[in-house]
Length: 347
Image (cartoon, rainbow, N blue to C red; front, side):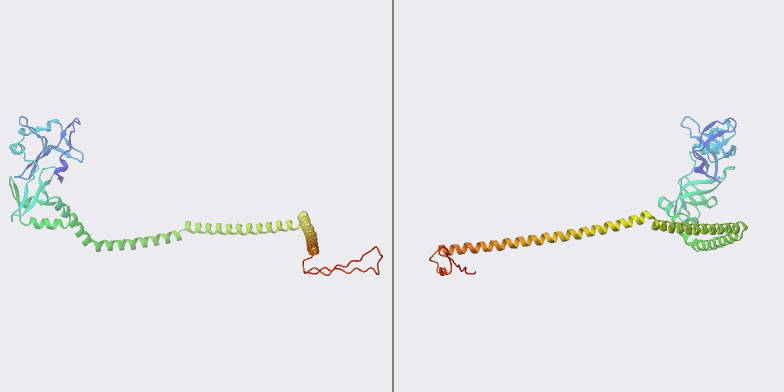
């Protein structure tokens, strides 16, 4: 079965010489017999005849091209039989009339048809119910046997076609997708569950098969042996390292140079301590000496101050604190000597 719009636009090629004859513009459809009589190659004009290819003379209709025997296969519409010539003349190609049920319900418009590429016999028509309708429930199909009349302005179909459209809508578009998902959900879940269980069992069987295979057993044995050898090498290396470290420590402890250095350090520390001790004593002596000097200096200063005060008192006879003049006693001393006693009052 070939869809009409899939044919429109295809290149026409001759098998005899590989010449491209043009591209298909439309289909010459006979609404009385419900047949595609020919494919329109050139629509023609007022003074020119349309060029067509009769369906029985088509060798094959492929995805990218239509093959015909030779250039002579392309004919003028007037050269074909009367039905084809009349259909081409009326410009009645791919019909686009309204579809109305015998109950008077508008069901949409014909937008395409499906025909047998060998005979041209039309089996179904594709009907569009508008942009929104197509999205919601998809395009519908009408069988040729459901058609009552094909008129100039409308095609009348059986009353049950409307119900058929409703059933088709449940399987197409958004409505169909939702309905399909709703109906198929339990089956899908069951399939997923069964497949999951099957995959799980397959995985288990595969694991058991791998584990029990001689190659796997040998591989596991080799891995275990290698692991044991590696562990033994690590333990041996650790022991060797431990012995090496202990020997190095013993060498350091027993090294004469290190012992001598230790003794020298201890001796220098003792000498330094003794020097610090001597310096401390010396510094203490200096401090004491300085303190004595300061003390003696203060005593002299105090005595000097007292002497100055006494002299000032003697020089001032009005001072009632002047002491009684000293007694001169010449009895026990030589005549030329006078003994004077001065009583300095204490402050």
